Image (cartoon, rainbow, N blue to C red; front, side, top):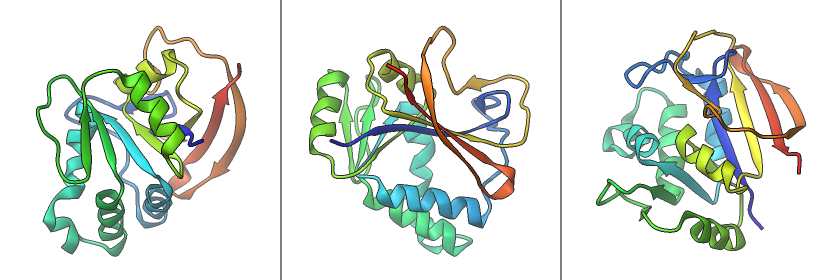
Amino acid sequence: MAEIIYSMLTSLDGYIAQSDEDIGLPVPEAELHQHFNDMMREASAVLAGRRMYEMMRFWDSPERETGDTEVERDFARAWRETPKIVFSTTLRQVGPNARLVSGDVGNTLTALKAQAGGPVILGGADLAASLARAGLIDEYRLYMHPVVLGGGKPYFQSGLSLALKPLGTQSLAQGVTLLRYAPAG
């Protein structure tokens, strides 16, 4: 059975973005970017809400084939090859290799977990909060950048209460520390 992994870059004070217009976190350089490329390549699917999906659509653009660096071109290929499931009640259509779901999230994910051949990567705090409340997230990966944003969009939604057990840590490029947790219960 596939695992759903909520994975996001975050500041030391727990924010994934400073605001809707400015993420505020450092851009991953080649070595850190390669880590995310490898993770995307291993994923059997990506789950996203509307905002996260719209932000990531950048990687669907044909210009990414001739992007600035090989690591960016590699990520664009991995993104395009990985099936996406987009949860939204406002979108009417999604791009290539993506499926729009506006109905029952629980049944969709239960079926996906039974069918998927590898990890399912989840991005976006709002969707993650909904899935966490339903007990559908198997692992939390916080990629902690050594910066403090002082406010913004938190990794864990306000009011969400979880008991977690540590799975491990890893030091990565750019001073980023990966913290891995699973639900304790």
